[in-house]
Amino acid sequence: MTRRKFTAKFKTKVVLEALKERQSLAELAQKYQIHPTQISGWKRDFLSGAESVFEKGKTDKRSESEKKNDQLLKTIGQLKVENDFLKDALR
Image 1 (tube, rainbow, N blue to C red):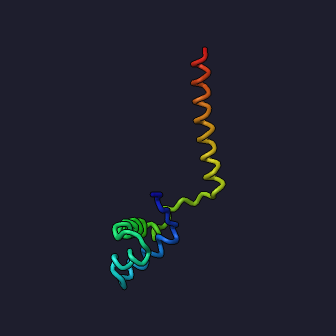
Image 2: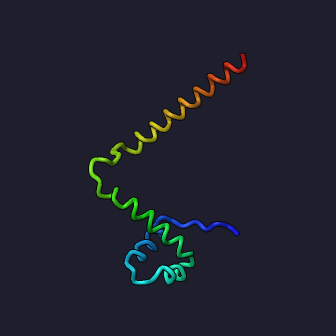
Image 3: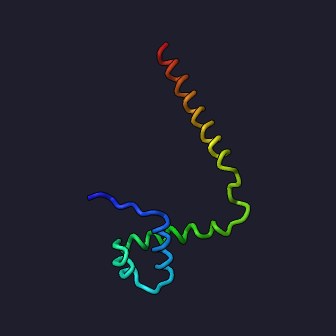
C-alpha cells in the first residue's frame, strides 16, 4: 500500500473546517477519507504555527536570491572541505 500525500492547500481546507466545528472529526474524516487522528495532528500543527503570522520584525526579510546565494556559498564551503580532505588522503 502506498502512502498518500496531501497538499498544503488540502490540509488547510480540512483544518479550517475542523476549527469551525460544524462537523465532528469523525464526520470530516469520513468526508475526506482520512483518519481522525490525522486531522487532529494537522490542526495541532496549524495552531502551533499560527502565532508566527502576527509576529512583527522577526520575519526573514532577505530576498529569495540572497537565501539561494547563502545556500550556494554553504555548499561551496562544504565541497572545498571535502576536496581538501580527499587531497590529503591521497598523499
